[in-house]
Length: 255
Length: 319
Image 1 (cartoon, one colour):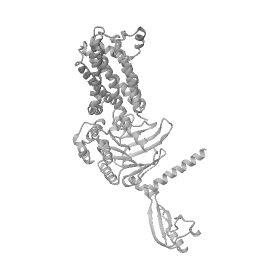
Image 2: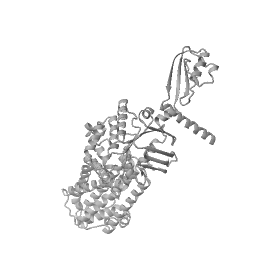
Image 3: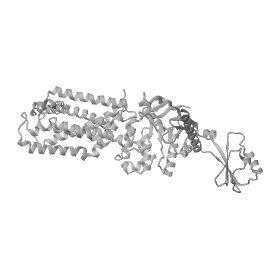
Image 4: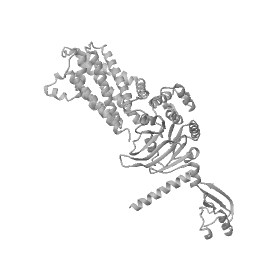
């Protein structure tokens, strides 16, 4: 099958151009706020806390904090990317173009994931100024980073299609994803929780993302790394199915 | 003549139950300017949206340049450019970037030379680096056309192209549409400015309540359905028409100073001679007389009203 590469590239470039136009909001602001976490929880409070499984607290929270930014930025970039053309009416052009659903998603999700990955790497780089850390499995670290960015950009794309106002656009990232990330072991190991809550927290999908990502840094994990990877693939599959259904039915994009 | 767009038995019923198109059949000839007329809510935009892939049809099919718009959507859509009714643009983008985006989206490799010619032709080249939000309404309208033409389509849809546009720009737009047709582009425009259709179209389609009421060559339509009116300015006002003129198709205006006689131009016998004889016998004198041919607007209004009456009758019978 012949792909419309020019179409994918046009959407990708358009979305990336939006990132550079809004550099302060899309890159500088999340890097700054994550740096503040490093200063407060890593350098200031972290220095008074004991190591967790042999890793200093400042270093321990790095994967969780990167994941926190990665999830929220992937969702917000992808959801806004497709929501805004719907809101402004420019979606007509995408819908009337000789471009398939796969190519549309590749353009929007590809750009959103690229931004998130860049942001994640930038945060990682910034963390070096405040905290000393190591990456035991850099290949796996990149793998988790890319897979998570891709999966949550797809999730964001679905939210952007579903949302018909700005409030809906924000409600899932703020009311669901952020609490799940905070409670998903970004700042602690789930082994530190009482036994009952350790079991409950396993229903939180973010636990698996953070645990797998942290394993790639320090070789320590709350859950088996294979389970983490399987969970990411499961979520990826769910998002792909959701998007397939959206384009098949025209849900909220075609009447 | 070759059909570049072929619509067969097209029906669209929205999820709320409203049927916007009812069994529409239409062929648009290659290289023509086709005007689709209809009152608001008649189904014009739905028809265009289905052809362009924005709305899914409920049943029926559409072929563009021989390609089915659903099954073979890539080939079909490559041939089509759409200028929507609303000025939908990304305000923060530059003129050049948005036109390049449109070309890429439609699968065409970059061609800076073509884009420059296009923007120059539409008097937008000087504004190529301006943000869209800084453009005037007229420039935005031209930009929408530039975006629609960026991938060199064979078919161009203009949905209400001159809605809210000043007279000067409207004239510019009309001449641009003619130039496009001369370059081989088939233009389909929807409008409720009858003047626009009368000025530009080769053929006219009238749509009302989702049904295509007629499709006809514009001049033939005016000839076939047109009536002529003979206006008589009376020397002395009349209170009412005399009995001797009651059998004629005559109307007296409110002031009593003007009579209007309607006749069919297709008919061999117009009845004018008979009217003049009767006026003479009735000793009614007139100062001036003139004839007026019905415009496309008169025909359109007549058709739409006729449809409405038929619908009302059918509705009444149903009850």
